[in-house]
Length: 368
Image 1 (tube, rainbow, N blue to C red):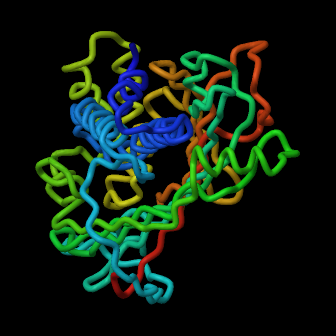
Image 2 (tube, rainbow, N blue to C red):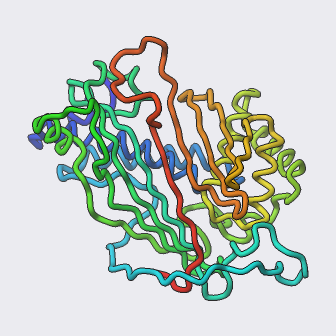
Image 3 (spheres, rainbow, N blue to C red):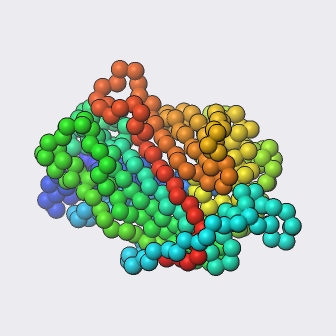
């Protein structure tokens, strides 16, 4: 008996309808998938936290399905205080190159480090494919083999996340998540009102914004806090030395070369995707990823560099990360799960990623 059958059994006395069970399952699957992506943005060199974060998320998500009959937001590892009104930030003038404090040398990616009183403002918008079967299950493509029937339609939905990182990293950090499940497109192209209503039941649009404040780094159990100055203190800033250091760290707990390579990619990509690592750390990670031989690196005339990665562990997929070479900030990240030759049920064109996140990063003169 799988977890969803247990959920149905536990809630028999609560008179949950099939639609509500299906909706809860959709929330759980979407939340686990979403939390994995969020964890990717939070991890740096503390890769041993991955297993704990995923396990915690799964536990929280299961509890949400079992114990609540109301529509619940996707499970999140961190606590979410009551949302409050958020004024619009005042954008700063274009930042000017500055010398690294106390060294007299020009920092990497000049003008990307917030000065006293400023914040690094990061907005990410994620479009994610969700599939549904005739049974009412909702799942990402990577989970199609676990579905009792092939998908009959798909929804491309949009989520929004926002962060404010203070110039003094020991100060107050702000995170916001939402709105979620905003409609982008249904597949196949022609959908009647019944199918639209079905998706509205399975995955309702949620306009709420959950907010989290933390001090000294991202909220969580990591020590030093993720994103803090201390968090990056022991990382070499020379690319080859950093690569050797990371291989040693992840090699201490992986059991095969494939696992080591995948854990190494997880660490390097998550650090870059966070967009809040210090400039010299971003530069070192970009160099280490290039030297690793685990990514195809391509520079473009428009000032961007792309890293294409193959991830064979767990859910085989291809990931692409686009980085602005003048800032070291990621602008686009895509994920496309492997489709087996002749696989049935995929009504989405092959050029649509399963996950596509766009990032907008700027320096602002005030926080939320």
